[in-house]
Image (cartoon, rainbow, N blue to C red; front, side, top):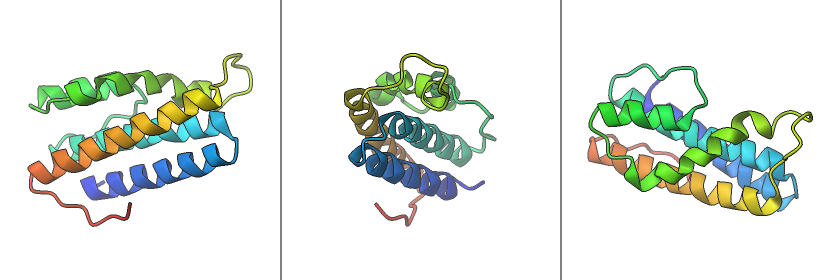
Length: 131
């Protein structure tokens, strides 16, 4: 998949996360925030010629990007979103994200998307995506 397609899917996940949060669906919002960050990181890997691995581990995706010379320090704290890839999707987890946690997740995901756009532009890739 091309970098801009990954980024487009990331943008859609972030839009969904915002809508879900506005409607009080906090766990679902946190999940889509994690997905947005994950897909933004995978956009970077795709731009670098690396096949994005099938993983939800944001820290691992950052390490892969760093190995290719990408500075991820600005978004390091977004690795906390990894827990929402599973935690927020299943009812047997006791600690569903609160609405405050979901709101923070949306902010973090937005930060990752902006970082990814900037990083892609620095690599000469401009994605014509909404948002």
